[in-house]
Length: 351
Ligand SMILES: Cc1cc2nc3c(=O)[nH]c(=O)nc-3n(C[C@H](O)[C@H](O)[C@H](O)COP(=O)(O)O)c2cc1C
Image (cartoon, rainbow, N blue to C red):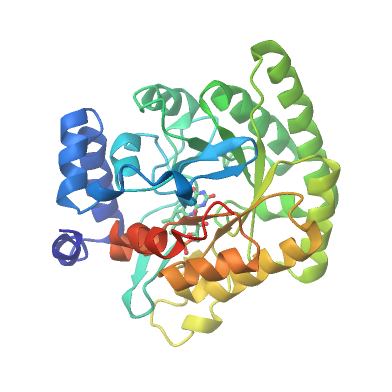
């Protein structure tokens, strides 16, 4: 069904079709029957009960399968039940900011179909924590949920830690893990938080807060740091050392790229923002490989960026990823991509 729907959706502007689909999936998510019907219509029904061999243990969590939805598709936590039925092993929601904010002016999302790629400069359009948490209360509690937190655009960078602490406290009760986004290219200077001292201070503060939350709730929520693909080896090694020192539970690599080498002839290549999809694949896989060489499995890696086939997913695992996530490939191919990856992994997953 998705191959039939896609040409219609691609006639609309990218963000219009995104909003239309997400609003529909949001309505569908309110009813169990509609959720199952929708999954059947898009051809995802057969994946809703994954084989036990596909489950993966990481960060103290049992992921029903190793293919997750990457952050940014469901920023409002509105469509969890329907998205989960598409076959994802888990969902990473957000990025959510403490206060609601509109993000950057439109247009701010662009398709590069020749490359099966997207450029976006959404800039954390967010419903804010209160509404996000209310929406998430409607999700099936069995779904494994990562929640990706960020800072408001109006918060100066030197007060950023406070925004992340508010985010951590706000989502703690509902999260299976919390992802700390220091790698979106669309919030001014956010990526500076990947620099040595800034990252160390941020993670130190989040760890202290997590300890307090663990003590008061009895629940220990793993912390994951999401990094950019535009880092050199020295920077990656520096980040790995800080993750170790702060006993961070996982690392997600990568966010979108500012590089345009692989699409430089495209008429939309000049659009400001983060590029995702296959043109990002090599840089993302190289980042995963560099992290793995350093971390040697000590901290699990979520491999993200340009996965558009089972082979591309296998390459992320071969580079050292324990889990993978998909965003742009899902926009271009729909749920059949998840199924293709899971079918190819069936004998190997979970090892
Ligand atoms: C339109 C769009 C919005 C995104 N928003 C977020 C976000 O809010 N937070 C985040 O951590 N990553 C965000 N991402 C990055 C994705 O989670 C992912 O890291 C990146 O797109 C690479 O994966 P892909 O090539 O499979 O899309 C966004 C990506 C796209 C295309």
